[in-house]
Image (tube, rainbow, N blue to C red):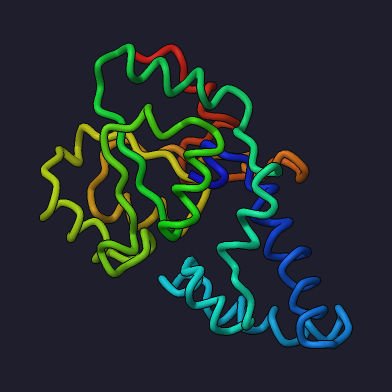
Length: 205
């Protein structure tokens, strides 16, 4: 979702700027000290389910992280062409699933704000399966709960660890997003078919 459908600029700004600022204010420390405390914790938790868990970070920071995201929801924005792609998939009568690491309060907020929720036949939340998309157990547990054909599935994501896990599981068509954050340069992607935006995959065959 983030960096694929939605501009990753929102999350990058939230975690790198807004949350550290609010942490500094709440704890009466400088922004530099807040970053010194938080950044190592961020690095340690990347790739784990806790990294994506708003409840976990609320406990760490002593802030209501979900409420803080709600406060800045106006900054949430789709990537260019995202809705055009969603409409094309639905018009093709294909199933459209959203597989996300986002915490429930986060993905619901974002789908409500963008109006994208109505496009999806199913939302697969990693927190419901006890493993992030980077973890091989994610795909094993999803397939046990929801029948689908991996070899005939197209999976698109901006995270290389997530894409590798999908490939290792046997997802047949895998595409990386090169430009997940509109405020940052495009990335060079090796090892996967890559496009700048979902809309670049149109027309569907």
